[in-house]
Length: 324
Figure 1: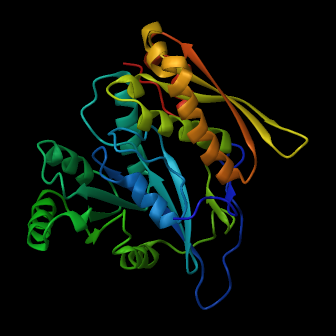
Figure 2 (figure 1 turned 90 degrees about the vertical axis):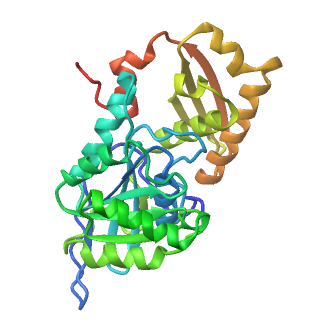
């Protein structure tokens, strides 16, 4: 999979859209939003990165990695497909969980097509009927996508497809491996065929509307998730506080890692600073590859008790703070 280098990212947050006019040809342009929803760790971020052809959403083996809406943009023929990667849907326990689940359903309700990913390795879980009932309430076209099909036998796939289709009304069913790319072309063609005609909403070479400051923070959070274990990653949050372009063409980035308790600081920093150094090196390398620039990354650990109940942190993550 290619990195973002050579393709456009949004440098600042924007709610405006490109006014590119519909191409006057036999094949007028199409554009639309495709929401990817499902339980945590169903493979939504991996799938979006595959379909866009670049890394625009972080991926880890841990559940609940994605916290807010991430958009990736793909051009297929004359069709611009804006994929909306959403947080996993699960039973919330904290305000952050509640905000993530609300954001996931909101992303689906605003989409032209909603794609529900079912992890075939996990199969039919206890909470699946409840989630699929919610899918039934979403307007518009709905698609079932069985993911990780390379992991189980075909007869089991067919049984899972039949069971899921019995719980919700899907317009189509696809079987894919988001990791290997199997089934990509057929799925993309379906999206092209079913999205509405209209002007392109973004420049043709733009692959995401995620600001680079936010993507850089997400990459550092990904490295933190991959490096640390147990509950600490879920008790942390990363923000890009300063971004300075240097005269020599390099960029200086300063990021804050928020944690909830002072006792977590020692775990995050590690013996002789080894853990925080490893996280910084891995993040700096990937951010540098994406920017095609030399990156000087500085990480600062900040203890902010109960940051998971801080409305400002939610705004930074692009989430609406639950008021109840």
